[in-house]
Image (tube, rainbow, N blue to C red):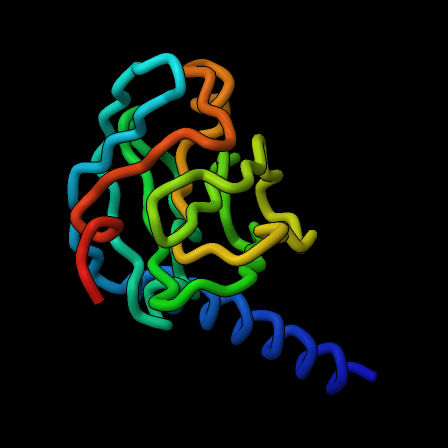
Length: 157
């Protein structure tokens, strides 16, 4: 019985070290300015990190303990498709904007719950997802139909 307890302790330690090592190996993210134009004409300026590769999209904002109020991340999926996201290993509560290839917000998920495995669905085809600090959507009255512009959104493919 003692051998099983020791094996279990070693497995737990290995798992903790593996998760810590994974958290330390954050991929590099380039940054770019991003503007959201609301229906009322308000221009909201953010600086977002770009998650364009599979590795970057899978890692996203996991393990981040803080993010500037005017910061976020844009996920570029390359082609329009139905997208699902989740918050596992994500410490920060987030607002998610699901954006079509023309830069129009098609769906919004406010206050995504940290560490949740619940699936967050784009509810239709989108090409981009922008993650911002939770509360930004409500604070600035961002709505479905508002426009998003950045170098990533406006580039030709």
